[in-house]
Length: 458
Image (cartoon, rainbow, N blue to C red; front, side):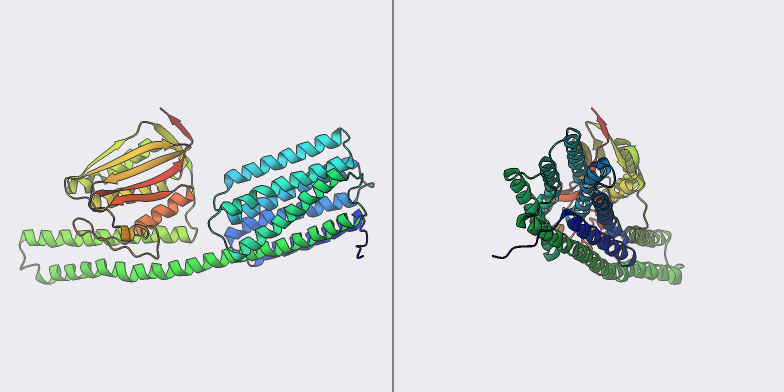
């Protein structure tokens, strides 16, 4: 019968040490030479975890040479912390907004560290400490695994990576159960089971690291592909939407310049108004193009501070009053709460101005626009509703996508590029909120977006 040669603990620790040291070099080399700025934070977490793990194995190798507190308590606490860093890196790749999950991971890790140290303080047996360590690591890795299966977006490398860690967890669970059923007073016993477990765990860890790097590269490649598609659409908007208003502006100015003596004062005024509207459209388009391009290139700094939302909404309604008065549109604002949020004031003002401008554009004369601010759980929800022409079902899905061209004129043939809504979506995403539209053609539209709440008063 085939039997594995027994592997002593120091050999296993040495193997883990060199494996993790090699991983650290690989991760940080990849981070500095190839990764984008977005992925560097994820790689830093993962690399930091492997670095802490490398130091932990050094302490474990020095057992019986240095004090037990360092080689047992500190070493195992570092192993738990390393697993926490690694799982946070996993979560950042699996889930877009994972801040709450990070806090949960830290809490699980802290609980595992405290429990293990209490066990050693009360002279728990080696077998008990091994079981606590195994169970702690199992639960630290459990949340990212569950999170993956709750996510809609899946890919080959993401599945490959998570399956590696599922195997990792299964191995740890089997060993913990085996240790419970067959207690031993050794860290790693000399039997075939522990030798096979150690080798499989080491191989799965290495395969998982490869999966992690492939997943980072896949995410990076997808972002590059999206940026290239967005760039093409960006130039399409410039060439098509900017050329239209500029062409009108040039034509109107030529007519005015060449025939100014033949026109009456009223005709000159009418042409001047048309020229002004055309230039205004050009300015707004350029403003949105500039803002959107700055977001895409990371040039806009997120500067958040506590702001009373009610006051900010009222301030932007006042700025939109003139445009509304030109069409005799009444804008009302109501809220049962005073809600304070930590946001970037300029970004939220840009969202409000764009949504109010759209509502005015697509509402007939003598229409009405209602702005509401309500609290839904731990989020503030702002809605801007009009009784205008509404949004056709055929273009609803395209409203917040740059690759979905939206052509819909306002009630007085006002033009738009759709960039304003793209900008709104980008800024809402930065605030970890959501934006959507509810509309029925001919009955008006309601645009809603959410923001996290800091404080509120009835």
